[in-house]
Amino acid sequence: MVLILRYQGYQNIIRQAERLTLATLENNAWSIAQIINGDEHQHLQEAYQEKDEISGLTQDQRYDNLHKALASAQKELGIETPVYTYTKNEASNSFDFIVTSSLDPYFRHPFTSAPEEQISSYGKSNRLPAYSDEHGKWLSAFSPIRNSSGEVVAMVQVDQCFDHFLNEASQDAFAGLWWNFLLILFLVIIVWKYVTVLIYKEEEDKIELQKIIGEKTEISERLSLREKELERQKKSLVNKNQYLEDFANIVSHDLKSPLRGISNFASLLSRRLGPTAESSTTEYVNYIKSNAKRALNLVDGILNYSKLGTDAHNNTSCNLLDLVKDARENLLSVIDGRGAVVEVAERLPDAVCDKVIVTQLFQNLIGNGLKYNNAEVPTVKVTCTKDPEKGCVMAVSDNGIGIAKEYQASIFDMFTRLHGSEGQFEGSGIGLAFCLRIIKSYGGEIWLDSEEGKGSTFYFNLPEALLGEPEMV
Ligand code: ADP
Image (tube, rainbow, N blue to C red; front, side, top):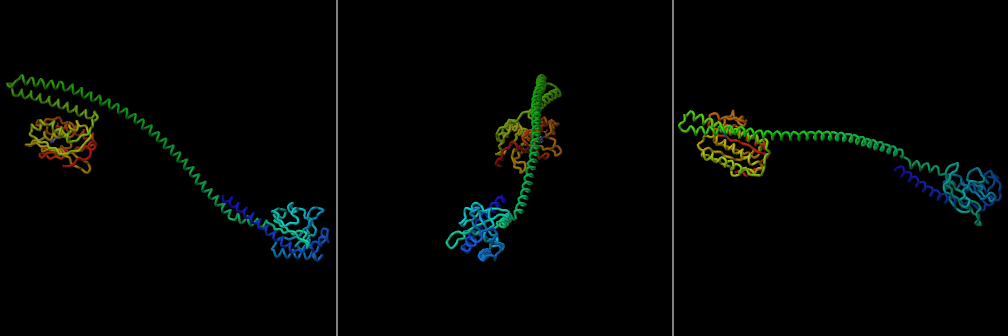
């Protein structure tokens, strides 16, 4: 681009310089023609017809005068090359040089290489477009010399060699071009480097991308295999759960019917024996009855516990207050029997949970609070407190017998009973294990705070079931 612009600039300069030089040459030729004595020139031409007939400056005064006029004009006008006159040779239809500003006359030497335009312009002022010969590139202008009668007797030609100017102009035009060229080369190298880096980077990115795609495909294949495996395991688990549930149902049914049989026959036996029976016999029969009942409760507890793990929760929206009230309702006979009190907070949180099992959870905790309680008025309170870390925490507290520190961690284990051996408190050791399992299924925790003889408080939260917090009372 820079090269093209520079070349165009150079061309313009040349054209302009050529025009100006030609105009100057034409003026010079015209000016010189005016100072040449046409009559004298005519007489000289007529006097000497042969080539080199004049060979020295002083040979003829007229030649010397005309030469001096040309030489001084050349000097005055600052013309670099000799100025000369020529005339038309009618015989050969060419020109003959007549007088020159050079010191050596060149008289009547033929001027055969005149361009056609110059020949046709004989007698008129004109200029020639640039032309070249063995001496270089030339610009010329010529003008007629007239005698006192106004007739054209010869022409004056002024030339200027254009090579010098062309050299300078081209040097000027292309000066610094090397630097431009080097700069462009430098820029091209930088751009090329940048492009190759980009291409290389793109290649690398492509390879990286292909690698990532490959890895991704591998991962998705592995994932899909894993999904299939999981699906298979899920099916197998569902089948196993179904099998376990069926098994639990069958076992419970098969266990319960002989137990019911034992219980029923023990009742029949006790009726048959009547009030007259020996006290030890009655005691044994009652013992059979109560053990059969315990065994039946145990089977029911195990069945409920096993179902908890297999059935999906039937979650619905509810308010915990309603569930607590239902649990209290279910325990009404115990409450009335013991003359107990169950106090419930006025507001409890809303929840999305399985109403049946969460009611069972409250029922177990409230039931334990009433059962393991020797107070005159057994009292159980259900409240809700706000914990900064655990959120909404439910609390079931009682004024019962309390639990010694060393047993507090183990009471949530299946079949753990602290107070069953004396026969005072009936139970299966499944209730708290059942509670723990429900709470865990909602992402919660259960813990307690208890002191022997002073009562216990069981705390739990249900983060995946509880919605917001109730207004605290
Ligand atoms: P169960 O009541 O059928 O024996 P649980 O799993 O509900 O079984 O309770 C396990 C044991 O924890 C109970 O046997 C009892 O010794 C103790 N326990 C549970 N709740 C309380 C309570 N509120 N106060 C004192 N002891 C309790």
